[in-house]
Image (cartoon, rainbow, N blue to C red; front, side, top):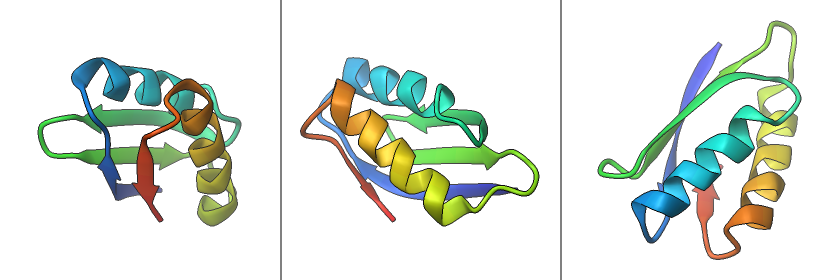
Length: 72
């Protein structure tokens, strides 16, 4: 299952850090961040609870870029 989320991030480098953090989160099959569109697309592994996984994705992204935001 794929879902898209609106994000708020300051620069392209920060968006890249968010993408790497999201991809490394358990339950995420793949994630891409489009800095120009301020959008994150996340593909979840089968059987995962998207809401719970995204809470962890947000935590991981905040660790690498404290002023980023994902609008869940």
